[in-house]
Amino acid sequence: FVLSNHYLNSGTDLQRLDVVSRSPIQAMLAEGVDGATMIRVFCQEQHFIFKFQTALDKNTAAQLNFIAAQRWLGLRVQLLGVLIVFSTSLFVVLFNDYLKLDPGLIGLLILWAFYFTITLDFWITAIANTEAALTSLERAVAMTKLPEEKPFLTEEGNEPSPTWPQKGQLDFEHVCMRYREGLPLVLNDLSFTISPGQRCGVVGRTGAGKTSLVTALFRLVEIDTGAIKLDGVDLSALGLSDVRGRPNSLSIIPQDPVLFSGSLRECLDPFGLSKDEDVLD
Image (cartoon, rainbow, N blue to C red):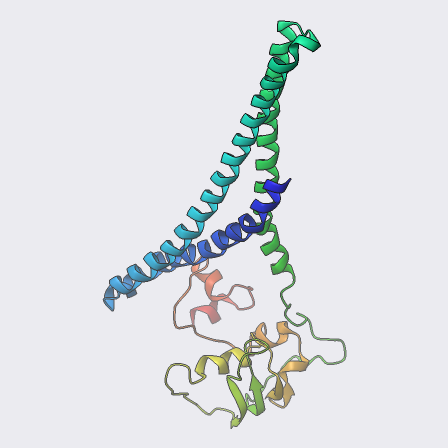
């Protein structure tokens, strides 16, 4: 018990470090496969190789320390087993004149002591590894506690008209947004109006808030204060299906094109809301 308790004080944390440091490696592999062309075009091979090697070194260090902790436990359990077998043999040798044990029984006692060592090693290692492996369950439970998106459907009585939006006037009114509680605001008291039919371009350096505007507009992140209105309707009062799912509502053309599994028509009209003639146009 003392050995396993001492091992678990560090073994669980080392296992957690191993699991956490493995995620960036898997993410970089996926990014490297998907973006191999862009990496070569901008001659960033050495940069990504360095990032991958750094992440790999961190994971290897955590994994080696975890394996070393396991070997530390295994060695001491084996030494404890040797001590038990030695004590049993010494007891039989010293007190056999008084106990008058048969040679067969003496051999059986030593054999039991030997198997007790194997069983002890198995149980301590199994308990320690099980508790260390529970870090994966711990991460899964943490995922279930992440904040959920707002309701998908609009509450009864707040539904917009079937033809909404008709004009397309967009109003940002004193909008403040942050990506997570405790982080600084990425949009701070932002107000502007885009009139119907007006074309508007947003220009700025990296980190200026261009992507944050789209994030707030599509409610990928809920705003802290203020209001975003489309044709006078506050988007925060609608369900996500009305904000993102209406055929005549908000739409986006991403920077990186994506083709879903299926036919080209299903990619252009995944919900089957348009006729073939409209898709061809």
